Image (cartoon, rainbow, N blue to C red; front, side, top):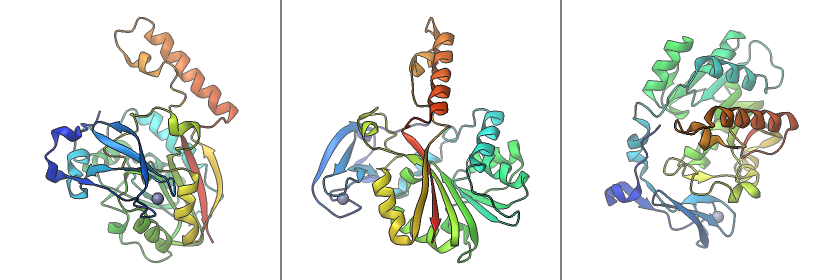
Length: 289
Ligand SMILES: [Zn+2]
């Protein structure tokens, strides 16, 4: 598990306060809850959700340079997830140029390269780059999407899974996404969707301080639409742990019915997937028009 510093344990100079909504600059926001000393607020005007207190970007190493942050659980499971995620994409030529931002375990990249696509990826964490090389023999470039120095309109497809809520400047980020994707190209995202029921759900366990912004379909579309992206579909994420029925219990080594709880947990997730019911994480496919 990652080491997540409680805000009170950090010296004040490592933190910054966010007064106005980073999305619309509105000053009217409401604190929904506080997690590990970091208040999470929702803008009354545009519904953007953001940490009102956060680590300064230059101190992110406190989180991501941790050896255990990018833990690789099970390479076989990851491989299957990678293949399944690849199948979400529309039919493409084998010459299609794919790139994954935040390539993590390397499983998606491995799946894409195995299908002979012209695929590449980048990631921040040196340890995940090393593990991807070791487990899947894929080379991931260290750094951000911008550090990859892709050409204008180079890509047919850009994918990023679970990256959005970590970004300090998603506006600049989507400018870069727009620049590197050709017209008619696809963007596949996996992200949390804090909408309706899920805005109230699991509050206090939303991943502060590394998750600095939270999105719903409206706020994601506010980022995509002005940059010429049109959402093609939104699907509940098959690889989400929701519903977490007995999940915590099944993780407790001292729990008496731990195994049974684990089975109920995975059965409920499967049933949810088969029925296509809403989840707190979604896949979004958008097309650059
Ligand atoms: Zn706002």
